[in-house]
Image (cartoon, rainbow, N blue to C red):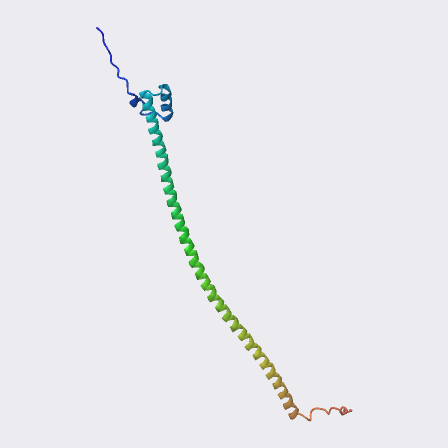
Length: 160
């Protein structure tokens, strides 16, 4: 009696399902060109390569979209900041014009006050001089006898 044990070998498709690209290349080299196994391995290698390229392109596209979104957000933030700076600059410019006008007005007021003060001082000096002259004239009228004549000899001194 002969007992036959049948061991089922996994198919090539089942064996190669988890192979890396390097393992597929090695399996291809082990099979002769033109054989069914070689053709299957070449097709599988093409599919795996296409899948890898597709994943890489998808990842690049995802990263590019994320980068574009970040750039768009950054440009939006910079635009807002630039608009705010422009608004602040306009306000500062208007404020500067107002302050310039006020400074010019203050300068005019100070110059006017200085001119009035100078005029008042001149008037006070003139009035003081006039009062001194008037006082001298009054003194000369009220006390002419007390003043010695201008070209006469001095009065004699009494002897004891």
